[in-house]
Image 1 (tube, helix red, strand yellow):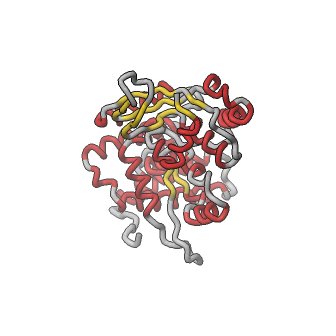
Image 2: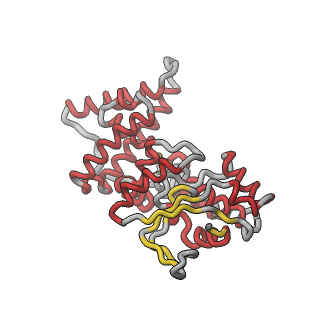
Image 3: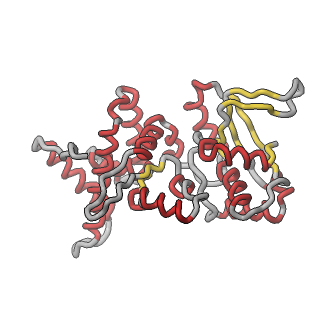
Length: 309
C-alpha cells in the first residue's frame, strides 16, 4: 500500500523523472478518468484504495525495514510504469486544489527488474497492466534509446530566430504522450508564458509526426498513407535497425535535418489547403509531394543545404 502523502512527496521531489519508464505522461484533468480521480480524493478519500486501479511499479532493488517484509525502507531506481495519471492527479489535487491527501492510499504492484532487462520487460508490463486509456504501439516504443536521445536534443538545441524576431526557440519533441502539457501543469502564469515562447505549440513534434515527416522524405508515401500507427511501425523498424548498426547517425545534424523537414512539410500542408483546386486528401497529397521532391533531388544529384543550421 502506497500512502497518498508518500506518493505526493515522491512526485514533489522527483517530478516526471519518476515516470521516465511510463509510456505516456499525465494527460491532464480533461479526461473522465482524471476528473474521477479528483472527485474521489475530494469526496471519498478513504475509498480511493477500493476505487482506483492502483500503481504498477518497478525497481532494481528493494530493502525492507525488517525480516517480516511488511514495510519498505528503500528502493533503487523506482519507476511508475502504469499509474502516472493517478500519481499526477493526487499531486494536482494537493497543489492546485489544496485537497488533503492524508486519507488517500493506493494499491501498488512492485516488480523487481534486473537493470539489463528494463528496456525489454517494462514496455510489456505497461502494455498488459494498462486499462485506463488506450496505449498505442507508438507509446510502447517511446522508451527506445533513440527517442530518449532525440528528446534530449530537442530540450537543448535552439533554432535560429524567425525573420523579424530576436527570440530563439526550440522544437519540443514529445516522446511520451502528454509531455508538452505536463511540463506546464505546475508553472506560474509567467513561467508558462516563458515556456510557450521558447517552445511554441506550432513547434511541438510527436513521435507519429516525426515518423510521418521522415518517411515522406524517405520516399515511402504509401506507408505514410496507411495511417499513423502502421506508418510508425515502419519507421520504428528503420530506427531500431539503424540505431543498432550506428548510433552516431542520429547526432545533432540528424535532429536539425528533421526540423528542416518538419518546417517544409508543415508549410506545404498550409499551402495546399489554400489552393483553389484543393478538395481533400491533404495528408496523401503532402506525403506524395514531399516524396516526389526528395526523389527529384536524389536523381539530379542535389540535396538541401543544411550547412547554415
